[in-house]
Image (cartoon, rainbow, N blue to C red):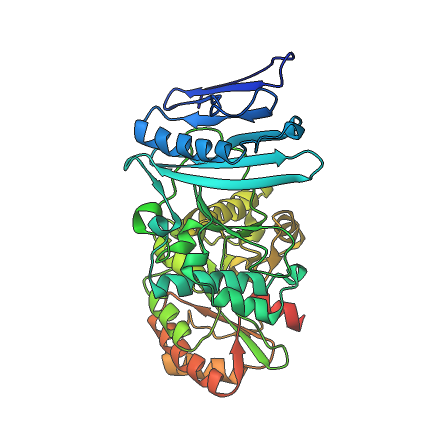
Length: 444
Ligand code: ZN
C-alpha cells in the first residue's frame, strides 16, 4: 500500500492561532484532513488546534464535522479575559479504515487556566456503504443471547486476570452488564474493542479497552460486521490493553480429581459430535490437531476454541519428528501453528504432542524455541488398533486416576462412542474433565 502523509503545522506567532493541516492520500482511498475554521465567537486569543478526516462523501463528512462543531462549541469562552491562555486541541487517528467500515478515534485535550487538563475520547464508526454512522446498537445484536455470550466472554476473561484484582461483586457486575452500557466500542480490522468505564468497575483506575477477536463474536456482532476487513491505510497500533483471543477455560477446583482426555490426529467429521458430548457434560479437553487438516475443518477448529477447549500442535502431517532435519522440524511445528492461528482468529497452541510420542533432545529443543511444552500421555487406550468401543471404554475407566492424561483419537467412531460413555461415567465418579494445560497447572 502506497501512502503519503504530510504533516504541516504553521504557527502564526503574532497571534495564538495554530493551524494544523494533514493530508493522507492513498491510491485506493482518498482521505484528507483539514483544519476547521472556528465558530465565530472563539476569539483570536485562544490557542486551539483541530484536525479531522475528510472522506469526500457528504453524508460521512457531515457526521464528522457535526461532531467537531459540537466539541468546538463546548470550548466557547464565557466572556472573560482570564481565559487568554486556555488551550484546546482536537485530533484524530484511525483505528480502522477498511473498504466497508472505518473507525475514527478523536482525542480532545482542554486546558483551562490554572486548572488541570481534561480529556475526551470519542470513537466514531462509519459504514461507508450505508453512508452513515454506526452506533454500538448497529454493530452488536440486541438480544439476550448476544448479551449473555458477550458478558460471559468478558467475565471469564477478567476472572482469570488476577492482576486486576476485581472483587466478586465486580465480576458479577460484568456478568449482569446490560447491552445499553456497552456503548463505547470501536470496530477494527479483526477485533471489536469495548471500552469499560472505571465507574462500572471500581478496581480499575483507567478506562479498560478490551479487544475481542471477531471470530469469537459469532452471535454477538451483527453478521455483516463479523467478517475480518483488512485495513486499506496503515493504522497505528490499537490502544487496547487487554486482548481476548480465546475464551479462558472454566475454573478448576484443584482439590477434586482431575483427568485430561486427549484426542489426536483430527479434526475429523466426528469432532462436532464429540464437542456436543463434551458440552453436555460440561467437560473440557485438549485436541492435538494436524496442521494439514486445519483448512478443511476451519469451522470445527473455531468451534473447538469457542467452546473453551484447548488445541495442541500435533505436527503438520504426522511424521516421526526424530527423523526430521532441523528445517523440517521448524516447518512441521511452525506451519501447524500458523494454520491454527489463521483459522481460529489467533489461538496459539502452548502444547505439542510429537506423533507416536517420538521425541529426543533435538525435538525438545525445537519445541522450546517455539514456546511449546511437550505433552505426552500416561494412559494409552490403543484405540487406533482395537476398534471396539466397549474395550476402549473399559480401558479409559480402568486407567482413569487423578492426574491421568488419556490418549484417544477423534477419527474413529468407536473412540467417540467410548468417550461418550466414559465422559458421563467419569463425571458421575467425581472427576473434573480438564484440558492438559489445566492439568499441568495443578498436577506437575
Ligand atoms: Zn497422532
